[in-house]
Image (tube, rainbow, N blue to C red; front, side, top):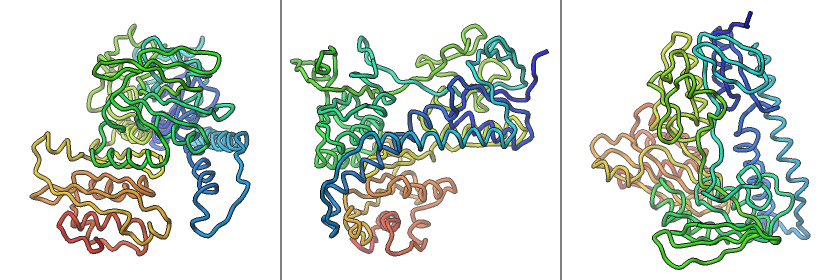
Length: 463
């Protein structure tokens, strides 16, 4: 007789394991299926966490070699120990994945190792064993994609996974794709000594973000030493003994040029990962981009089967998957749950960081929404000057009639942390005045958010 559960979750990434914990907290007998040797999914193993370890370490390396002298700290003989840096990254990953394993045991969640296949409503097969549950949750995440005809070998043409474990710093690197992943990892290797060129199909980096932020980010990254080929496309890649020869053409047609690099990072995006789940056999419907269709309760076309995270529509973000996991768990337990998708922040962990929430100016104009904008530079903030980190600004967008905050866009030090204040205000349908009238500690970077909110009413104090 097969083992019976209330909920079986396939995939132990941020969406899956958080959903499992919340299910267990609510008294549901829960199992989680994971084919990796370690829990945590792409994020903890080969994504968010290891990349942040390398971003932090590379920032400190550059700071020690180039910027501490400006603060009166003299250094000499600063050397890179890539092996030690990679060990730090691996140690961070191990600590986090073991932490998730501990949480599964603490919450009495059965960890089933192997690849889950949905045999039908209420049945999941793992190897030779079949498990039954009232509800099945698909949380299998996403996978990297490449350009047609270009194979990722994780040696000379690498994905984000390969870029996290290069055995040495290449002399040159081409990043295909000027989005979040490409810029984060590109800046890591630029700091460590590689000549990095970013090739982007669009006419600017960070597609979909606020236009002013994109323009400022491009200016700052160029100043740091990144090179860019915008409005360009890669049409061919040939691996050679020395590296990779790329054929690059203008996006709108024109003469091709050859670009050579020791390593090429493919960072053009990700796709929903549903391979091997058996969805076609059981009739789970998907859209034209391979994402699983779900209703407002995350239920698929097969009754009792649900999906969350990167396998459904929406931004491919770990925190979005986590929130969906919590809400779904509460729905399965008979409670109510809700997500405001307009209040999900996005962060680019470059230096300076870039963060956003809500609508961009471009979107508001396209939708015909009347709005007011307030903007304040970090240059005018005392704490930012003390830190010698003055690039960037905060922009707050508010409804012209009600003053309700519609969006915020930040490029600057600590942007990923600063955005959260605006997220909270938006969750409560707050106004720019609410932010402006809230006392912010001095001297802190948070004052830039307050000043931007004041600027919505044209009354910024320090600019």
